[in-house]
Length: 314
Image 1 (spheres, rainbow, N blue to C red):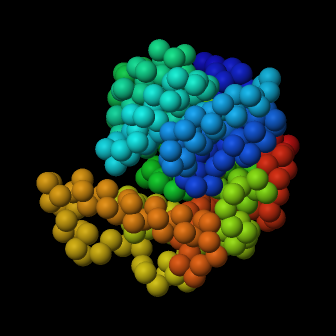
Image 2 (image 1 turned 135 degrees about the vertical axis):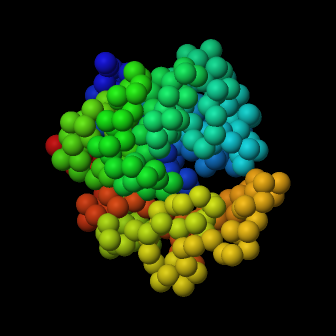
Image 3 (image 1 turned 45 degrees about the horizontal axis):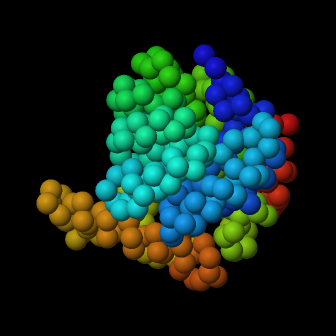
């Protein structure tokens, strides 16, 4: 089986993971210059014209031995999905990562445009489903991932998917240094997707307070909250997070159990939570909801992307 270097024609088997509000073209260009792949959530762009401009900027800057992609939320909470997919397929990139929904339409359109599709999965059942739909690889999101994470350990998840599927497994979660990369590869992953260490990069467009929080806090300061998107999500346990709590309110719990209302409740919670996250990312505010994973344990300084990649490969 090919490893990620052959799949994407890159020098090192690493994807700089797509992070809502954090990832930008500057980070991805720096990642490509280091011989790894970079990825940006399409939702980081408010308009389709901005998304198209980003695609063209990255295509123009792409070096030999670099690759870039975009992340698509493919469920009904993302009303921009179809337009985003159309623009990405028109302009072209190396890969798409799908999250939170069925990737069937994405796979069909992306493959017609010669774009690979990797699908976020948290268990074997969904991995087999996306393999059947023609996915090129799975992103196995384990219980050490930042943001929305899965229930299984890296070793367990990689093993069970490799046993039940024949497509490549890219491991996501728990990587902050070279020893972690080596460990995931030893478990049977073809590569790794790394997010949280890049929040504290010089190229990231978030506040210095957010970056410094990734330096000051560690693995023990990461908690899971239901208060952002309605789906469990890892955040830094700041005083504000402690104040508002991490459990859904009783009314949200009741509404989430109502089959007719559940979808709309999730969409409203997602919208409110994303706005809170955006405010924390771009403004110095006491209402800090900073998304990160336990791999910030190995973040000790705010560094350029090049230095962060060096920690992962040297």
